[in-house]
Picture 1 (cartoon, rainbow, N blue to C red):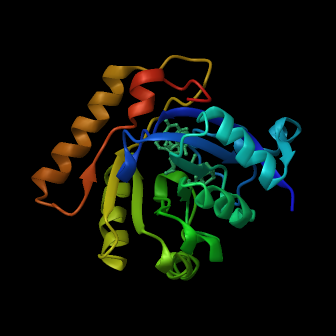
Picture 2 (cartoon, rainbow, N blue to C red):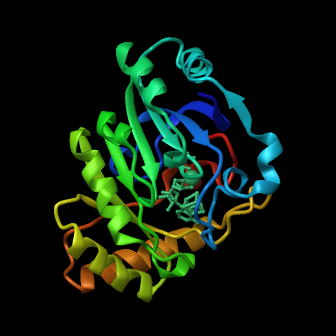
Length: 235
Ligand SMILES: C[S@@+](CC[C@H](N)C(=O)[O-])C[C@H]1O[C@@H](n2cnc3c(N)ncnc32)[C@H](O)[C@@H]1O
Ligand SMILES: Nc1nc2[nH]cc(C(=O)O)c2c(=O)[nH]1
Ligand code: SF4
Ligand SMILES: [Mg+2]
């Protein structure tokens, strides 16, 4: 079973959501069934980048993680693209046998039996600003598939008031999933610097909006890696 891998990088810190700050090696899978208007990882989505994706066996993927982590078990985050297009069961089994922990980031459009083998399943349904429409039956199937996981959480990117209202509805569908909100980053070109003040302003707006609304269900977090490194890839 060959995997299409965009990049394997780290150790770095998880910059988003439930595991923020956690030392992590990332495995980024190539290919996505979505085309979010503001995607910050187009190099893992757009087929124009296909030539740069490497075919790798599960053994090769795990060997590279082991090398990057110096053989010390840590959290491996499988992201993409949509990693659920591919079969990561063998990588997860290999890593768990050596004490590594696994997280996966996916939008919740495709479910996989291996979701149940994860320590953390991060489901990130896409709000209206993305231009995508969530298939809630498919999303519910992902929640089901993740039953055996250590934890399943929901993480929603918010750009505007419409996204905010949408997030409240999404939470109402799955009130038992711990909820994380992060402001959207509108400037995702890896060759251009981010504007830290603009990012802080978006976080301010999201925080004040949520608190003024007395909505206490979500935790609100910035993208920590973007504050540290901007849109640089491989961090
Ligand atoms: C690049 S995606 C890859 C995994 C999967 N396709 C997904 O969307 O969940 C990883 C995370 O980055 C978030 N993200 C992507 N572009 C973003 C942006 N411009 N601002 C903030 N978060 C973004 C996604 O919503 C998702 O939670
Ligand atoms: N440090 C760091 N944290 C992240 N959290 C989610 C990421 C992703 O692109 O999936 C990501 C990433 O690319 N880097
Ligand atoms: S689902 Fe994730 S990887 Fe795919 S286009 Fe949207 S943000 Fe990018
Ligand atoms: Mg990212």
